[in-house]
Length: 414
Ligand code: NDP
Ligand code: PMR
Image (cartoon, rainbow, N blue to C red; front, side, top):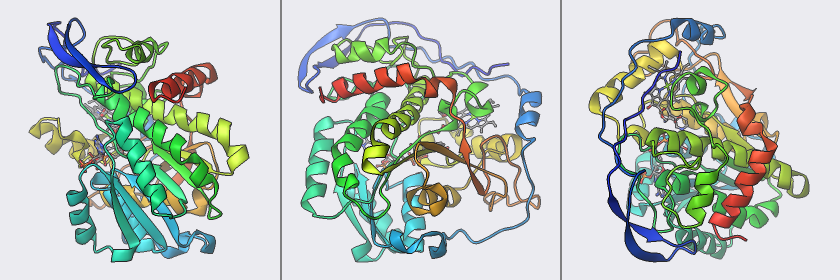
C-alpha cells in the first residue's frame, strides 16, 4: 500500500524569469502547464501496520543513555586539526554537527551559510572558541556564489580535510516551482547542482590533505526506495530518464529532473537520490586516484528541524510524535549531529563509497524519553552505524553516468 501526499495540479499561466544556461537572466516570458496547483492535499488515510511491523523487526530496545557528546576518543590522533567545511551549518543537522565536532575538539569548522549573521549567532550560542570556526557566505541557489565561496576559501590558505554538503530545501507546499537565477528549480540547484559544483571545485584541494580527506553529501531514506521510509510513501524518488534536467539545461522551464509535472515533495526526494548517486559516482571516479573517502548518510528522521518550515503547524506538531511512536524513525538533532560528525571524522566511517545509516540503541527520544528507550524503525533512530544498501536506481551505473554528465553541463563544466 502506498501513501499519497501529492497535491493536485491545475495548470495556469505564470510568468517567471527565464534564465539562460550560462546563468544570465534573460527576458521574462509566460509559461504554462507545469507551474501551478490548487492545493488539495490527499492526506494518507491510514497506516500499513504490516509494513511498519516488518520495519520494526530490527528494532532493539535499550535503556542505555549516554550523554549527547561526541567523545574525543572516537577520533584518531591523525584526525586532529581537521578543517571541515559544512554547508547549512546555521540550522538543524548542520548546526548539531558543528556542536558535536566542537565537543570532540580538533576541528576548525568553516560554516558555509547563506546568512552570516545567523551563523555568528549560532556560533555564540554553541560557545565556539573564536579560532575554531570561520563563516563564509554561500548562496546555493547561485553557481556564481559557489565559485566566489571557493575563491574565498582558497584565499584563507587553509588545508581542507573534509567537505560536508548538508544544506537543503524541502518545498512540499508551494503551488508553483521556484526557479533560481541560473534557471533551475530551487531544490534541484540548492540540494544537488550547487553541491555537485562545490565538490568538483574543491576536489583538488581536498586531494592534497594528508589528514584523512573526506567528502560527504547528506542523503535520505526518502530518496532510497528500497526502504519503508522511501518506498512506501508517495511520491517516490525517481529520476526517470533525466529528460527534465536535460530540458532545464536547454533553457526550458521544466521543474522536475524526470520531466514530469511539478511536485515539490518529489523534487526533494529526487534531489536526495541525486545526492546519493553523486557520491557513488565520486567514489568510482576519484577514490583510487585521490584517496578521498566519499560518503553519503541518512541521519534518521530529525523531525523537529526547520526543513519542515513549509509544513502546516499541525504537521510539525504531530510529525515528531508519529516518528517516535509509530515508525520509530525519530532521532534528536543532537544525536543526528553526532552521526554526521562520525562520518566526518570517525574511523568507523573511513570506508569510501558507502551510504551510512544507524540502527539500534537510540540515546534519546526527546522530551518523551519514555522508559522503553525508543523504538526503532527501518534505518531509523539508533546508535549503531551500518552500511545501508542504496536502491537499484541509485546504483544504476548508466543513469549515474548520465546524471554526472548532465550535472557537469548544468554547472558549466563542459
Ligand atoms: P534545516 O532546514 O534545519 O537546514 C538546512 C540548511 O540549509 C539551513 O542551514 C539553511 O540555511 C541551508 N540552506 C537552505 N537553502 C540554502 C541556500 N539557498 N543557500 C545556502 N544554504 C541554504 O534542515 P535539516 O537540518 O533537517 O537538513 C539538513 C540535511 O539533512 C539536508 O540535506 C536534509 O536533506 C537532510 N535530512 C534531513 C532529515 C530530517 O528529518 N530533517 C532526514 C534526512 C536527511 P538557514 O540556516 O539560513 O535556513
Ligand atoms: Mg515518512 C519506517 C518508516 C518511515 C520512515 C523511516 C520515515 C522517514 N517515514 C516513514 C513512514 C511514513 N512516513 C509513513 C507510514 C507515512 C504515512 C503516514 C509517512 C509520511 C510522511 C510525510 C507526510 N513522511 C514524511 C513526510 C514528510 O513530509 C517528510 C518527507 O517526505 O520529506 C521529504 C517525511 C519523512 N519521513 C521520513 C523522513 C526521514 C522524512 C523527512 C524527510 C527527509 O529529509 O528525507
